[in-house]
Image (tube, rainbow, N blue to C red; front, side, top):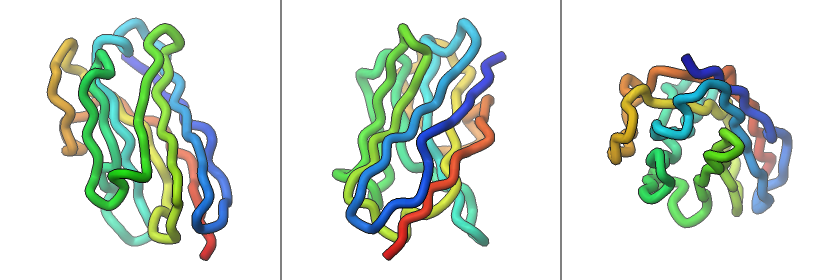
Length: 127
């Protein structure tokens, strides 16, 4: 079992930056791929970015590619999401998620492929 706790959200002006962190407990973190999802009010939870267990493979939603960067530090059991050039449409609750598929190189954009979820951190971008 892995527990995930997000931090780093807040209120920022359009064009600004935020860095989200997700701290994981449990020995299986470093062997599993991780992802970030977000949910805006009245909308479905959507994939933002994902990273393989080794960090060697990443994937991004088209809407954030070139602006967001996902990374991980397996020694510290932490995954990060650096968000630059933020837009009002980036507003939402950002959730960290982990897969229970050790050493899989696949980075999945599907919510159903993730077994562990954090409570989320609010990101609000004002225009």
